[in-house]
Image (cartoon, rainbow, N blue to C red):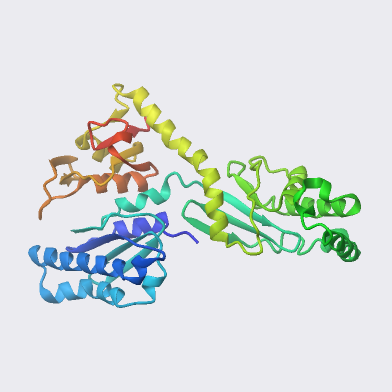
Length: 385
């Protein structure tokens, strides 16, 4: 299922209190780091730092305990730490607490302001376009809608035949037993392509796959979403011959579906599909370079932030692990940039620009300095018009 939705980002962004605490730490799925409770210790360090910052900002002891109590409970939850991914994001304030276990790496970091710091979550929404994975066996067919960071199973039982015999007739069972008996003499027969399946068996499999292809048409309406098949070679060749979906990937994911987990298949699929989605980022960087000096790009936060509020930014490029602090007055679009000065009166202008760009439909990219379109600025914007 989706890990963080745009709706949740919007909800988090609209929570405004005096002391909104955001914490990010890297975590580990397994290994000595889990056994030695390194992730737990790292969160303890962040918690101690947060308590000191809250006290420095004038938060009283009662409120400090109320805000941080859920974090302490999480530290003591031993089962939770055995079920981690690559990063943990925590958002807490008075009467609100939320955590996300995410498949993206975070540098250990905490931030306290009158709103949550959400910029580190935005890589979940770029370069992770949708794609389908279908696991295809004669005994079972499953369809999944995926992004880089999520897998959601789509129920298709009511759209396709439940079994091959439902589309070709009950006499398939007897012929299939004969075919499988022949396989026993040669374990490799299933991996030699279409020549491994001949005559009526192949024709009936083709009929079955055609019924699957037709049954999926109501779901596969968006022809721009890539469709990958996880199957044995000989089944892929037959399905490919009846497929009518235009964005069908021309190579199957080879894996033993009887033992493979969908998350393993998802990882294999993403390795193949990632270059397709990274193309958009490269195109936007190229457009930025082409349009510099025309008024359709910007590299100063003073000009970028008001445009982010207006929804006029197509793509925002932020230097990763950097920030720009200052103040912004919405009423008259006044931006005061103090660059790195974080204090009681300043806020992260880069975080604010990133969230407003994202919520208004723009793309936000966190990049290393060498990958920024204009390397002389920590923030670059490509305008819609």
